[in-house]
Amino acid sequence: MKPLAPALLLSTLFVLNGCTAMSRFSSPKALTMPQTQYDARIVEPESGAALTPEQLARRLAETDVVILGEYHGHHGSHLLQSRLQTALYRQQPRQILSMEQFNLDHQPELDRYLRGETGETEMIEDAAAWDNYRGSYRPVVEFARQQNLPVIAANAPADVVRCVGRKGPSYLDQVSGSIRQALPSDPFTDTPAYREKFAAAIGASHQAGSTLNERMENTYKAQLLRDNTMAARLLEARATFPGHQVLHLTGTFHSEGGLGTVALLKQRAPELSVAVISPVFWPPTNNRPPLEQNRSKGDFLYFIRPLPDEFKDPEREREAMTARFQRSASKTCD
Image 1: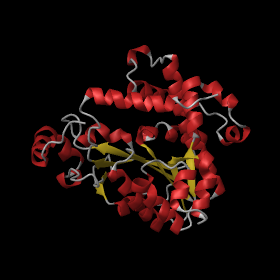
Image 2 (image 1 turned 135 degrees about the vertical axis):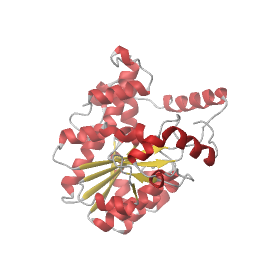
Image 3 (image 1 turned 45 degrees about the horizontal axis):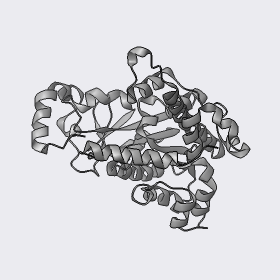
Image 4 (image 1 turned 120 degrees about the vertical axis):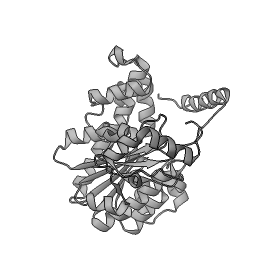
C-alpha cells in the first residue's frame, strides 16, 4: 500500500471528491475514517448507517451462519472478531466458532485443548496453529473454551491443499482413506464468478475467458478444495449442533461478494440464512468514496486502515518470495 497521508489532507480530499456520494448514502459521522489499526467501522452498505458490534449482533440474531472476512494479521479484523463473537453470544448463546485457521485433520488436537487436556503451547504445536495465533486468534478460542462452545477446524489439510496445487486434483487418489472421507465428495465445485475473480487476482486476461495454464489451474483447484471443505464443515457443524448459530472466520477472498465458501454453502443448503461481513481498506487506493466502490462486497462492511507495505526494496521482496517458495518446495507430495 502507499504511505498514509495525514488525516486532515485525506478528509479534505474526500470532501472534495466524494461529497455527492456521502450526502446520498450516509452522514459524515457514519463514514468517519478509522484512526488506528485497531479501529473497525461497521457500515450497512445500502443506507451507509454506522453500526456498533452490539447493533450488528442484534441484526444477525436469527441468522444461521455469520461469515466474518478478515485480512490475515490485521488488528482491526481480529478485534472486531472478538467483539462480535461476544455480542452474538449475548443474542444467541448456542454458538459455534468455525475457523479457516485450523485444518480438519487437527480437530482432535484442538478438541483436547478445549477439554483442558493440553496447554496452549502444546495445542499450537500439535494442531499446527498459525504463527499469529497468540496475537490474533487466542481471544476467540479462549472465549469459546470458557463458554464450552464447539470450535470447528474448518480448512482442508494443508499438505493435501499444497499437493493438489502441485499435481492437480488426481492427487486426492493418493491420500489416506480417513482424510479422503473427511473431505467433501465434490471438492472442486466452483462458480463462474469465482473463477473470474481468481483469474483477475492472479493477473489472467479477462478477455481470454479466464483460461488458466496448467499450473494456475491446479492452484485454482487447491483454492476450491479449501472453499468446498469449509462449506461442508459448516454444514456438518450445523448437523452436529442443531439450532446453533455458526460464526465462521475466514480470509475475505473466500467470502466477499458472496463468492467462494459462501456460494458453495448456499448451493449445498439454500435454506440457510447467511450473512457476509467484509473488510474494506480506508483510505482506498483511489479517490473514489470507499462505500460507493465496495457496496457489493458484503451484507455488512467494516472499514479498517490499510496494512503497511511489506517491502520497499524490490530485490529484498524477490529474495523473500524465493525463500518462501523454496521452503514449500522442500516438502514432497510422494
